[in-house]
Amino acid sequence: MSRRSQNPEAEPVVRMRNLGTYFHLHRRRKINLRQALIQRRFVAKPEVLWALRHLSLDLHEGQVLGIVGPNGAGKSTLCLVLSQILQPDEGEIVVRGKVSQLVSLSTGLNSELSGRANVRLLAAYLGIPRTVIDEKIHEIIDFSELGDFIDEPMRHYSSGMKARLGFSVATTLEPEILILDEVFSVGDAKFRQKSKARLDAMMAHCKLIAIVSHSSEFLRTLCSHALWLEKGRMVSFGKAADVLDEYDQVMGTPEHFVDPDPE
Amino acid sequence: MISNVANLYLRRDLLQELVASDLRSSASETRLGWVWWLIDPLFTMMIYWAVVVGIFGRGGHYHPYPIFILCALLPFKHFGGSINSCCKLLRSREGLIKSVPFPTMVLPLSVVLSGFGFFLFGQATLLIAAWIWGLPITVALVQLPALWVLQVVFYIGACLMIAAFGALVRDLSGFMGHVLRLFFYMAPVLYGADMVEERFTKGALGASRFADIIPTIYMMNPLAILFTGYREAIFYGRFLAGEHWVVLTVSSLLVFAIGYRVFQHFDRRVIKFL
Image 1 (cartoon, chains in turn blue, brown):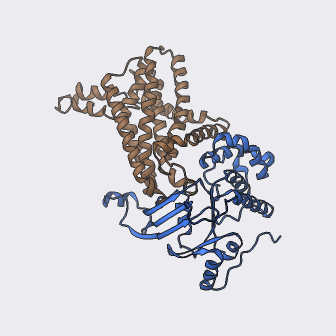
Image 2: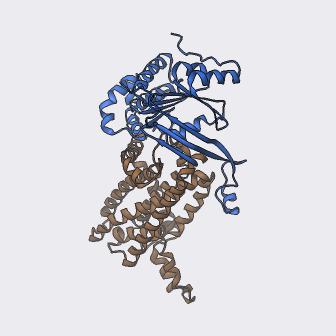
Image 3: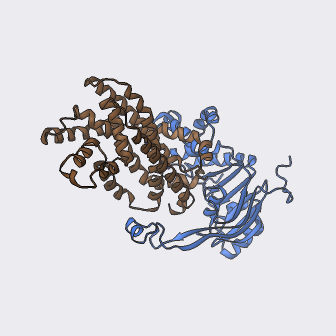
């Protein structure tokens, strides 16, 4: 199949041109009512911080993109823009395909309802059609290993159980573009291994995967390409090995990705 | 995902699921379930009944007073409850908003709609109570569905505004408590709108030349018309005056349109503020 072919002539899956997103910096980020009334403005005088700026990039089908950079480099903001949660303030982004971001989904769940009801709620948030969920609910429950606990109210769940259920739902979405923002810390060791296997399987179906990590060692094993961000600007982009070598050199000794399961 | 009509229609499953889970969870939350929603207005009703009828010895021409006051307490409870939970709504769902693309407008919408589910439960109870108390069942009850629709439209507009401002202004919920209390006394909940009219046209204050204008201004308040409408339909078995219908419809649609625009305006930047 030509799915993994990287033809530069083909339409890119993600196309960014001069992308920029800013945040307002306030000494007190949120203003209070007194300020709002006296200053007659609901947004205090902004100091602007560009979390991302002048980012132009084409991502093609079949690429696995690693995003590296120090804290505050704009990695998470890029994820927000890629998943189209945040609209860029400058430039443009075109994304061809259904995007899914894997994050901890324990918020937004209704703790009074059973796990089963929450699966349906979570699926609705993620935009999974009801028919698909009805079809897959057994698979989801099996994968989460919750057993009879699935009909208990969520308030009785441990945080690991919630995370497992969230992960199981999110990964049944079969997205075309998958964004992983530091997600490899879900559940216990056994479940982590299982979820890694599932991610591997998902990666085979995805058009494009973007992985955010501090650990260049970890990205080296998974990614075909890498993007190095610093203070919202692109430092370099290219083949994973080249970019990560450069990154490690500048950043000093490479951090070692501590594999939770040494097997 | 931008909150517009097209995206909301695309994600109607989510809205349905949110409303359904809200209704289901409060039914399973406690053994009394939905009755809790009724206990609050019932309790409030009993306090005012005791104070107004028992101590002040008033409310005689609004007999039976408990039914009279419940006609307005139920829609007010829906209003206050929805506004209160919208103040902190977007901030409490921060994690979700930042990780899943969905039109955030479904959140305030689901608050109003699930509140409406409880409200309908209250209405059914009120109708049964009115019937037991011996109030006649009249054709005027056909006005109820129209009042429900306008109530939901108006509340959604107000809640969209509050939800957007609540994300930007930190201490809105403390302030809203006072605003809601003001609304409670400014709208005809404890008393009837006819009392205002009587006081300013026939009473001691009738001499003032602004006297005629005050009841008119008073009845420009959509809440005042709405509560009066419920009283006309259930308590008196009469029809609400035509001009009131016009004002209520126009103001509800206006509030809805403004709320929708305000929410859309802040929609994109709200994520940055959370």
